Length: 307
Image (cartoon, rainbow, N blue to C red; front, top):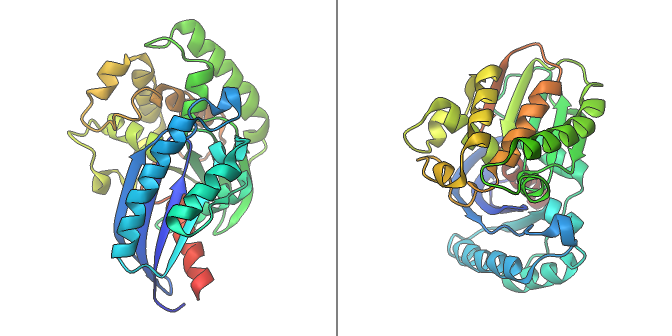
C-alpha cells in the first residue's frame, strides 16, 4: 500500500470525530484527532427526523473540519455516518449539505458495516484471540466477535442518547426508570448474545466506554495514554457504571474526565455496558479498553481505496 494521508470522519448520534492519519502498508501514524459533541441524533428516536438545530451544529463542525483538512494536504476524505442517519427520513438533505462543504458525500453505514469497521479499528493492538468488540454509541451498540476477522456481528438499536431519551427522564434516573430500561435491554440483548461462544478477550471502544474506564480508574483528568489498552476487571467496570447511573448530571459534569456533552446521556450508556457484560459469554473477567475504534477502521478503508 502506497503512503497516503487520509481524513476519516465518523458522524455518530452524539459526536462527530475527525482523524487525519498517514498510512503506508501496515503502518498508521495519527497526525490529528478531534471530536465535537453535536448531538445530531437529538430526538431522532421519537421523530425519525434530524432536528434543524442539530443539523446546523453538525454542519458547523464540518466547516471547521474542512478547514483543517485543506490545511493538512489530505489525499482522500472518507465521511461515514451511523445510527442517526440510518434512522432519519431527511438524511439525504443533510448529506447534500455535507457534500457542499466537504466535497464528499457521507456514506451511511449499515449496522454490519459499522460493526466490521469497529472490529478492524479496535483489534490492531490486541493479541490474536477470540475477541468480542463492544462499540457503544449514542444511537446503537455493535457487538462483533472474531479471530483476526469478524465471524459474528450484530447492531442493536441501543445507544446512550436513545436510552436516555426513551427511559431516563429524571435527574438522576429513578429506580422505576432504570428498571424499565434494564428490562428492555435484557429482552433485546440476551437472546442474541447467548448464542456466542465465550470470548477470550473483550474490547470496549468509543467515548462512553473510555469515559467509564476513566471513572473506574479515578483519573485526575482524561488521559488517552492511560486509558488505551487498560485492563479493568469486569466487576470494577460494572461498579463504575452503577456509580455514574446514580449521579445527578451536575455531579457527572464536574468529573475531571467527563466531556460536558456526554454528562447528560452517559447513564444510558452505562446501563447498556452493564447489561452487555451481564449477557456476553467470556472466559476472562477483564475488559480491555481501546482508544482505537470505528474511526481507525474508516481510515484503513480509505487508504485501501487510494492504493
